[in-house]
Image (cartoon, rainbow, N blue to C red):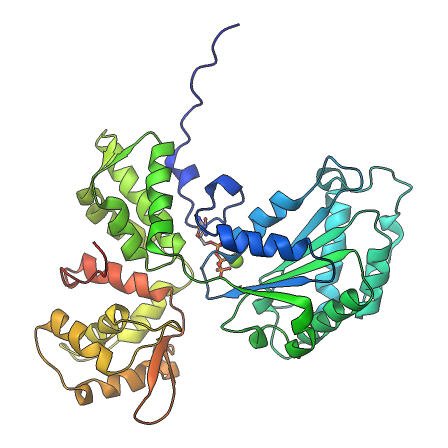
Length: 404
Ligand SMILES: Nc1ncnc2c1ncn2[C@@H]1O[C@H](COP(=O)(O)OP(=O)(O)OP(=O)(O)O)[C@@H](O)[C@H]1O
Ligand SMILES: [Mg+2]
């Protein structure tokens, strides 16, 4: 037999996927404890899961890897996963219609209905799914235990019946021991933003926050990614990219992809810090999700020399508490590093107030009470964008980073 030789090296665009969730367990870095927690919940009868967090923290990737790792397609009676994503025109009926349509669309692929007599889905009238009990009755007809992942649940309009009825469904499933686990995934600061009357299901749900990733986890995306590509890194490049990403893995993928391409353009196998600098304009151009427009709207001004961009950069560099909040005082040092001027808080209070107005996004949200107000970014994914813009414009102070 001839030796097949080493496996071919995948192209960079397959390794660094800024716009595509991960679904292969080996390429989901960090998140081990979180995956154990969610898997344990799925394996516990009567327990359902809510995965929530800021935009872009990696929720869909976790849900997809979970879905892949808990399927038992080779076992005739094994567990099956149905995965749907919601949109802004969904309600309770349309979400469940899509769930059941999944079974019709890909029965073989999912390993459903090994025996056509087991269930006759084609005969089911899916428009009749109007309340939780309808869902329960349909599920009872399935031959396999189910895990139903409902992603992007935040896109269902607030006030929509789905947000209440989903809680009722979870309660009903738990009370009547239905052989199905519901996993709800969505952008939210807290469960109450996703599910109405969530207190009634607190005993029946594992509520799992998906926080931004830490520097070590983001470094792994870079170092292991380039090693898969057969490339080497200049010392410190992985840390630099991880720090610029500020917890958001899509930026890590973006910077890895474009820095790697710069090196390849020069026919080098080593990716350097200079490649990273050269990659920043490409990375900024390819940021999606309206972040660039958010940034422009936040800093807009007719006055040359206005402080909006500098105050916003100071907000991005300020130390944040566990909830991502900072005080006006926290901006003083970073603002001094950026402008080389010592401003009193009074000089930028009005900027903070304006960032909270709809005319500028709002980019920030204020909380707390007089004298102890705190601010946080409405969409923290804009923070790495602000840093990259500043780096591109040579406005980023040399010692801005917290580590290394
Ligand atoms: N643990 C991880 N390891 C490596 N890459 C990751 C990880 N988590 C997420 N990513 C990458 O980060 C990006 C965003 O991930 P994902 O789409 O899962 O986030 P999300 O929280 O679902 O986003 P949204 O809030 O917009 O729905 C994708 O490019 C994905 O490949
Ligand atoms: Mg998602």
